[in-house]
Amino acid sequence: PSELKEHSKICPYRLTSCKMSSCNWKRKTKNLIQHVKTIHQNNILLVNGQTTVTFINFSVDKPYNSVTMINSVGSLFWMCARNDPKKGEYKVVFTNMAFDEQEYEAQIEFVTKDIRYLKKEKVLSEDVDIEDTFSKGTLYLPSVELSPFIDDKKQLKYEINIFK
Image (tube, rainbow, N blue to C red; front, side):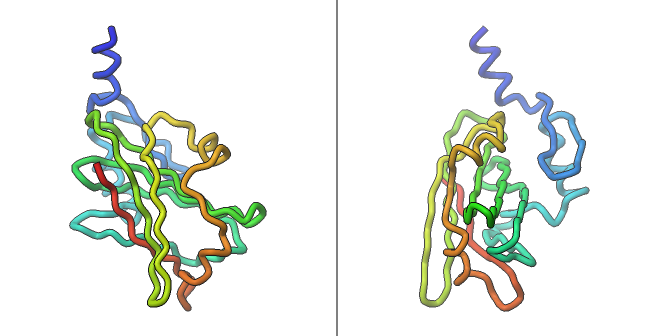
C-alpha cells in the first residue's frame, strides 16, 4: 500500500487542477502544462532559460495576487505571490507538481544597481493549502522593502531560481 501511495504522488495520470484564479480546469497532471501554455500563456515562466518575473501595476500600498507556473529543472512548479498592504507583507509560496521524489529549493533575488536582496525557501508539495501556508508564514518580506525594486512603470521585477 505504501508503494501505491508514493506512486500516486508522482503519477502523471493523477488528477490535478489549475491554480490560476477563476480557472476550473481539472484533468490529468500530464496535460497541465499544455493547458497553461494554451489558456494562460502569460503566466508561465522559466521557459527557454527566462528567469525574471515581472509584476505590472504593482504598488506596495495595494493588494496584489499572482499565480505563475514555472517550468524549471525538469519539473513544474506553482509560484503564488501576494502583497497584503494592511499587514505590510509580501509573501511567496512555491509548490512542486511532483513528477519525481526530489526536494527543491526556490530562490528569489531582487537587484538594483545599488542593492541586492536574496531570499530562499523550501519548495512545498503540491497538496498544501495555499491559504493556510500564507497565514503561517513562508518566503516573506515587509512590503516597504520592495519599493527600491519597483521601476517608473510600476513594475516589480525579480529573478527566480529553483534548485534540486
